[in-house]
Image (cartoon, rainbow, N blue to C red; front, side, top):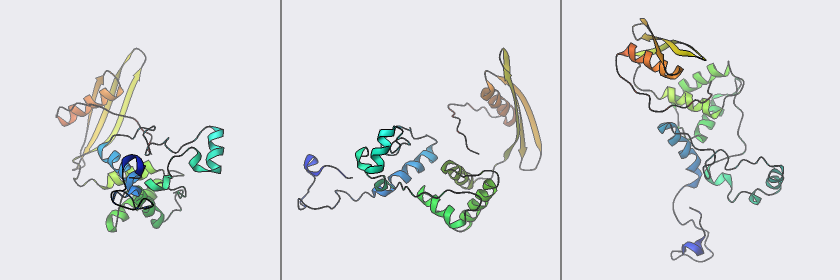
Length: 219
């Protein structure tokens, strides 16, 4: 990592004017690695997280914005490019080609080739026909769907939820099996999410417990 050599006594036998890094860590992979770990673990990176958080290189104040435009080091202690962030991001949409999608996926830490890339690009084009601009989270959702190696026995065919003030939440869930057969179950719960979980448990006959969930807007 880039540290103050004099403070950490980091010359380690090198000349004092040496610019050689103290370690072999590839700092350009930090942002990609952070996003990859976040996707695999399902834990979102906090916006105020140092270096890799969404707010690390964001500036809302007019004074800050003016200072950054004149000299980025005014309010940024490091260059965002040293951790793999780039300012020249291409906006992806329905006119984007395979090369642009592949390049953006690589920036996010995904190496796709052959059939994996073809499948991901096909999903991208399908989504781009319904959405004007494809975000990083959309791409990550596409890759996660593409990475599923086990064929699902159940597919979600439909969900209907009814809830309101002074009303108990009720959910009706319909699943479709690999044989094409559909089955439905209705259940009540302490809220719409709990009602859906209760209905799912009734359908699959396997006791499941929802430990944690979060809502993020992804098309």
